[in-house]
Amino acid sequence: MHWVPAYVGLGSNLQDPPARIEAAFEALSSLPKSLLISRSPRYSSRPMGSIEQPDFCNAVAALLTQLDAHAFFEQLRLLESRLGRTPPRERWGPRVIDLDLLVFGSQLSDEESLRLPHPGIVQRNFVLYPLCDVAPDLLVPGAGRVAELARAVSSEGIWRTQ
Image (cartoon, rainbow, N blue to C red; front, top):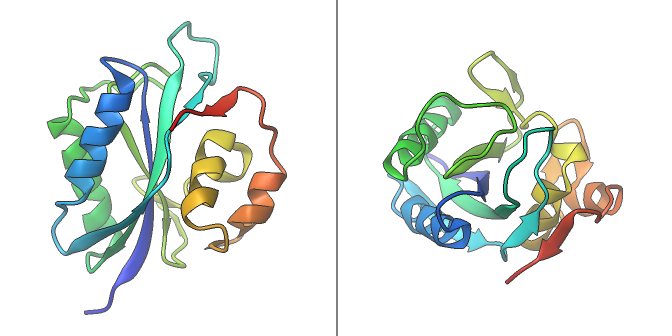
């Protein structure tokens, strides 16, 4: 079986977010049939939406995996649960941990359960800035190169913390 590059966005704004991000990196390094090959620095960002909540801590992990996209995505959901995330998932709400599958090889998917690349990736500086740190030349399917996409979004509301 061949190796596929996978990029995962990490986010937390509850219960010591930097520690939650570090725990998530550690958990990602133990995914079956997968290798954590790079990790971005941490960033802080203001929350999206109108819900009053603390700032987020964000990062991106680059992995190689032999899992298919659905199996990899399911592993991310299991990791979230083990790391303390509990339902319901409030859109743009506070969370202990959030693991988003951003890009999985060159795969496109518009299934209800799995959208690839992750919707909104091209508008979100808290995704693009750390993703640019690990994969500036990555071609996001249907969108463009990460470095170009990162230059096109504002740096307002985000700052590097590590």
